[in-house]
Image (cartoon, rainbow, N blue to C red; front, side):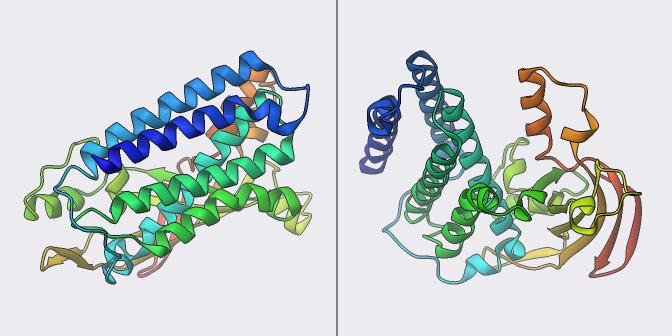
Length: 296
């Protein structure tokens, strides 16, 4: 109950802090109605997310506060770290975009987004510290915080503006569900967020920016992908084994493909679509070479 109350306090502090942003920023450009809508919507989203993961990640009996004992680096072979990075990036971008819409200037909104994303990652690790299978992971916190601060880094570097992180998911293996059943669990069919063998994380580079190649389409990028195969197994109820997979693939910049989408709403749609890697030709170069005419 203590932890539940702690999270409620965090939500309330978040709500009142963002509601009072106009006073703290000393600016008349903030729209109070938009700020109220943003603060209410984000508070509701946080509450809903908390109750969902409370019943999926943290549904087991609590244990004493503990740090990860080393299993963290074997679990999913660090693909989960890429997930924490993307989670921090999403949280930071959603928060900063929302308060910028209400009138907060760009640089401050990005900074507040980075702080919010890091705070959210810290809250998750505190909850993990009381879970029997997890524990507080400094590496989860570090990678999540790096993702939260990535938009801030992009704001200060022209080159980093042309490097984007993306995510793709396609269910081609049941290994995650099979291993969970062996552990005596019954994961939901919607538990894709823990299904690492079917996830791939991408780092996409704007070819035209880095090579100034006039013959290369401006909407076509090159991406490096990172994932894990489906060969993990259980030892003492912990996942081990498996192999990391590395890819090179073509990637699409939806913001440039959909150039005619010029309304405010359409610009937001193509911006958020650009967080996803869509099917394209790819090569897996590790652990074994394989060409995919269309990697999904």
